[in-house]
Length: 304
Image (cartoon, rainbow, N blue to C red; front, side):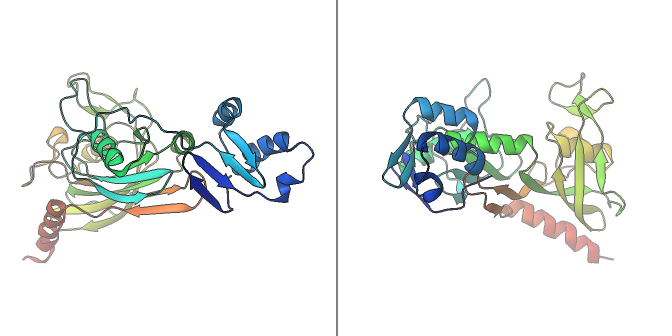
């Protein structure tokens, strides 16, 4: 469910003109609540909240929803150059660089992507809380999706739970991957001998990784993968267990590469817009160091 008609933002209000489907109703308030819930797909939690705070109003034939109230970022603005891949009033997609965590840890001493997004909001005059919908490992590059209001957060969080947000990863791995390897369905749990590591474990949580496409070189392979589940280090653990550790991933047995991190990149992100339902597809450009590594590995295919 989503809204297919025209709408416009005016400050903290979203305005739309539903037409006679609502304006002709004898009990317009009740009809409006039902329409927002059943036809637009507004989360019931937010609908009740707006109802009790006078956040649903009629102005003539225009229905107004207070979907964009000003909010504090929740993170100290700390400037860092970030690449914006997509943005509208509901969503933001940022291309996370290598070496930057999405969320601060307990020490909180480093600039994270959330700090950088807070600074970007401040510079852009956006009064919104910084709400990331998913994460990437610190040294993994690629798109990270943010919700810019509560409506988007509730809808996108639910889409994540329903596995409706598609993330495609590119990984350069050790060895020649067999064309028969299409799915890795192995549970993952904590490694009791190493606090930072995960491992394949019969008592772990279900984890499924799909290999969508492969380019096989002489000593390595380029894989495009998607996740059916989202366990910590899932791609790294699964590929290492299958004997194809990601290049540069020293934590899971990958031999070192010149830039000193795992050769893993979020290549593509696809999701339905939380309000309109439009399918948004975002492609994240590869970082230069990873492109160079790919060229080096691919060139070995032609050497005698």
